Length: 120
Length: 107
Image (cartoon, rainbow over all chains, first blue to last red; front, side, top):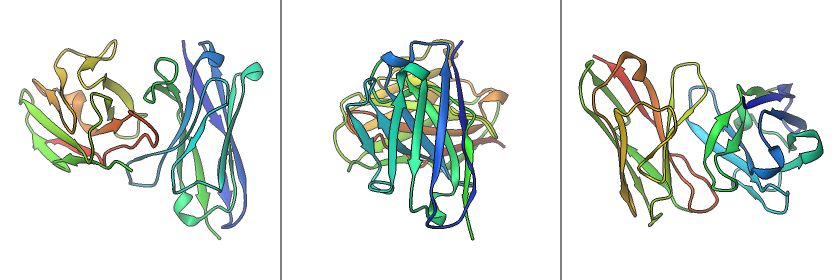
């Protein structure tokens, strides 16, 4: 059974950094693109970033480009999101999501999310 | 970037009603469209991909149609567990943009 477990969220001051992790199990992690999707309080879904199976292709939403970095460790079945220069508008529940079939760009499994709150 | 616009933003219906939600892309995305359902307080669930293909385990009362810029999600007979927010998402290329969501509840 596929499991995605996010961690690393918390309360952080504006301008500071945070690193999110996602531990994956139940599937061949190295064969799938992975993504981060966030949901602000009372808001809709916003795709944040995606990374190909081998890490060679990385995409970012304009809202986070230059501040966030996605990475993965296939040996440890783990996905990461390094977030720098955090802003109040980055406050959200951050989900880790798995591509349905390789690198198609839509998501069949989601973690429960980790909450990031940016506030002074 | 391509924008995804859903309508209506919200709707109220009765059990057994036929419900239709539309999603419009600002440019042609062929059939690279997925639909998700998010129940209150829960994680989003994939319903449909490739505009009309039903994800495994999803009830057959859900169906999708469309191609190009105009897409539709239909629930043939609304059930109590169908409440929540429905999102469309394009995936022809990055950014993998979601629509703003359509909230479905009961009258």
